[in-house]
Length: 88
Image (cartoon, one colour):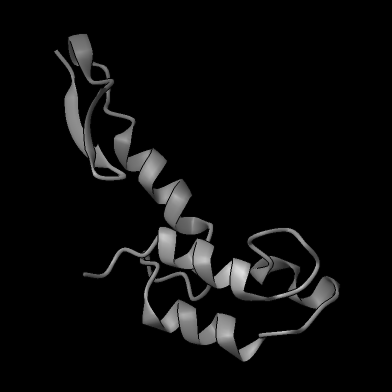
């Protein structure tokens, strides 16, 4: 048996068999961590606000917010943040 979880709109079965701990929460925490700029455990409006504050900036100081890794904070980064959005 395993632990059922929902990721990206589909139900998946991961870990948890024979007493093993489920790995789904770890995966979700890692994915949300990509865009959780204020470290509240969610990818939401607060993180979007932070990202928009740095819109069109470049350089090492904003690399944390460059989700697309194209060396500029732009619409691609906003799109990635919305992909990982956790608030409904």
